[in-house]
Image 1: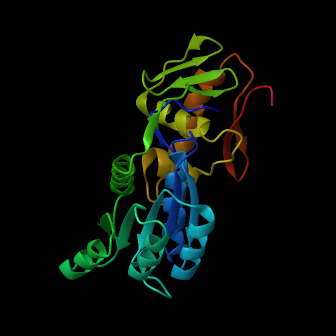
Image 2: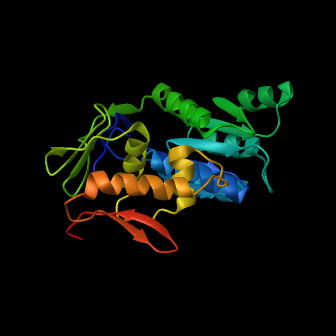
Length: 241
């Protein structure tokens, strides 16, 4: 698989490295999933001391840092990280919205902050802005390709074995998510969250419906690429697999 999108990448062409420091497990998992969907290399830590240790081993390009942690707080974590990497971009996450908390975070060197609850779209927009300001380059790569299926995100065109496949906007988003995760079983909950942005309470029947629409257009008259994994979800893989 290769990606169409204009992506922020490291100078050597490798994916951006992001460290997520958050002690709420569900929130950490949600952020990690969103960042990996962006194509970035992600590590996570649930407390301040492990965050400092992971940062030394991992060498992140960016840190998403919760202020309230179970051991040392995010402000102290930032001080320790900046001792070794003075220009490391940091986005603070905090449930606090008092002016003094925001000032404290920015005073110790935080580059930006988002208060909880927040939208993933806002977090991603702020992270991209931080990375661009830090000098990350924008790299263009070929279309997303899985087997004989090709998806161009710029033109929003899809071809299978050279034939154009006409898709609606929602079908396109669903196929893009499947193609960005080839050979990976994706649950209905994951698909709802990424394609429809539902909070896991969404109606999973819509996923079944749109998977059936995609099959009629992508797999019609050809060896199937979209497969149902009973009780687990769906997976897209090259027809030859």
